[in-house]
Length: 367
Image (cartoon, rainbow, N blue to C red; front, side, top):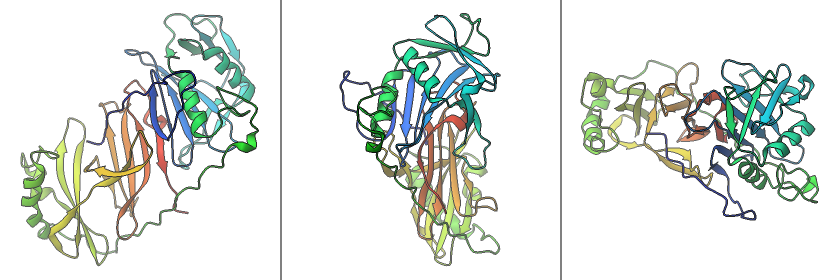
C-alpha cells in the first residue's frame, strides 16, 4: 500500500544539527519541506482528541514570511478576532487586522485566511515555545472543553524548518535567531518542469491481448502485493484496462488489492502489442526521511487519470482510514517514455487534519 511508516525523529539536544529535507515528526508536530524548500509544520491535537490543529507555512528564500492558520472543526477562524491561551493562561487577542489571505499551492483552490502579521506571529511563537498546550477560539472565555493543540515538539519543528531553509542564526529565523543577514538565506531551487505527452486519439484498445499477461500477474504478485486477485470477476482478467500511450508504448492496468473503501491497481508498460513481456512498473515517490526520489511504489490506490480531465497524468490517493484525514496522495506525468513524479503530498498521523492541509514533499510545473 502507498502509506508508509514514519519513524519519529527527536533532537539529540539543544545544539543538535538537523540535516536533510523530507518529513520529520517531533512528538505532536509534523514538519516537511519540498524540493523548493517550501515548508509546512502541523500542530496536532493530543492523542485521542480531534477538532483543532495549526498549520504554519513558509516558502524558501530571504523575503518569504511565515503564516499560521488556526483550524477548528465547524468554526471559521481568522475572519475576525481570534483568542489563544497557552497552558490555561490568560487569553491573548489577535485582532482581525493581523489576518490576511494565504494563497493555496493549488492554483485552482481559493485562498485561505490566516495570521500573516510578522510581529503578532513572533509574539505567539515566543509565548508558545515553552508551553505544552494551546487553545484558540473566536471568544476569550475558553475552558477545558475548548479544543487544544499540543505544543510538544513545536520548537523542534520550527528549528527543522529554519535549518532546511538556511535561516538558523539569522534575523529571519523563527526560533533560533542570530546576527546573520537575511541575504545569507539561499534562494529556493526552481520547480522541475515536466512536459506531458498526450496519448493518441482514437478508440481505446480492448483487453483481449492483455489477458495473456494475467497468468504472469497472478503468479508474481498473489503471494505478496496483490492478495485479492482471483476472488471475483473484478479481480480477474476482465478487470484489465488498456491504454495506448503512443505507437510504441501500451499501458496495462491490472487489479491488485482491495480494502473496505479503496482499491489498488498495478501497472505494466508494454512495447507495441506485446503484453506478455510488459514491464511491471514501480512509481517514483519521495523517501520521507531524505526527501530523495525513490522508485518503490508497486500499486496505486484509487488510481485515476489518463482521461479527458488529465490526459497525461496518473494519480493515486491512499487513505490511512476511511474519513481520509491521513495518508498519501501522488501523481505522475507521462513524458513519452516514462511516468515521472509531479506531485507528492502526505500526512502519516490520523488526527483530523483535512486532506488539503497535508504536507507537500514534491511538486513540479508544466510551464
